[in-house]
Amino acid sequence: MSNARGMFPALHDGPVYLDSASTTQKPLPVIEAVTRYLSWQTANAGRATHSWASGVTRELERVRERTAGFLGVRADEVVFTGGATAGLNAVALSWGLANLRDGDEILYSPRDHASNVYPWLRLRQMLAAFGRAIRLVPYRVTALGEADTADIAAKITARTRLITVTHLHHVFGALTTLEELRGRIDPEIALCFDCSQSGGHLRLDLTELGADFAVLSAHKMFATPGTGVLYCRSDRHDELSPFLPGGNTAVAEDDSGLLSGDMPHRLEGGTHNLPGILALGAALEVLDGFGLAAITDHNRALTQRLITGLRRVRDLEFLPGPAHAPCETGYGIVSFTLPGITATDLGFVLNELGFLVRTGAHCVPSDRTPTDADSVRVSTHIYTTVEDIDRFTECVATIATEVR
Ligand SMILES: Cc1ncc(COP(=O)(O)O)c(C=O)c1O
Image (cartoon, rainbow, N blue to C red; front, side, top):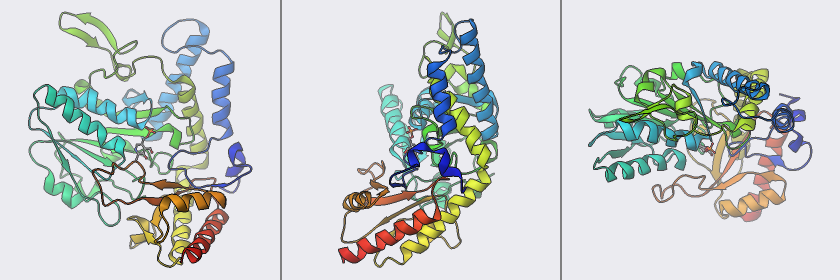
């Protein structure tokens, strides 16, 4: 990873960027992919037959193939979306609206990102308008920040239709795979994984994970904002209808209404975010170039160093996550509070001293989780160095002394 930073022009000078869980910096190949599309043979994909259009259509499908390979799935299971939020809403609208019946249940965590909470609340509201009352059943999070699988197991009923989990939690930095429940969950129950934070940090094999649906956020994987991936397992395809009907999504109209087109285009209404998708292709190449195993190791080592450094700061309190784990784990996300100074103020001071971190409630819906106070979140990636972490923890220690 020693040469990684050179690839990211925004990091050549300036503060230490410790907010990669919000969005990552962009490497040169991504910047070049966007510039190339905007300045050379700009055309729409999947429409005209002229050479520029067919060129970009081929490129788009190549990125789809590459994404499928990256996720261990088939290309027709990869839907391009506007981001992870759009992907989760697509599951709610394309699958939930058509398939959920009165009395059906969804298991979810109120301590997840709003993007994995609000789509289900909205779905419940929409179904209620059609006279179908579904239940949203909350499950707990452990002290380590993982989904509590014992609680999930206890809450599964004959009416459970979907369990939605965050693969790598955006505040706690803890991994949930539901492995403990493998073989014990009825395959009829759909499993939905929010992989926004694990994408680009861990080798993902969605088939191995047993996901029916999964979402990724391209801008957290070195690509650009406004692009994401929705994985829909092929044996769910018959259950999906267009959530964004328009160009691409339907093949014809008959007496009963629209006839849905084939996957994945059925869920890709409108013009694709072409620069974003091409950026994703370049980003995957960068990630594969470094190797996911090496990236995981790098972030784990940084997480451990961060925890060790922050443990020396008197009174500092870690949120659930790898700091509480019995073994050396971590995926590049650590959150904490420092008594005597609000997270927001601490964030401002750190910014003044040259460190960019995320502060606040981190998009966890606060009305549903009053126990989650504001905190400081530090998040790393391949361009983060051991020196960055050491300077950061020394700085927090100095601030803590002054606050006392
Ligand atoms: C866990 C999680 N889910 C969903 C999202 C939303 O992603 P997007 O910006 O691609 O909609 C985020 C972004 O912070 C996230 O951390």
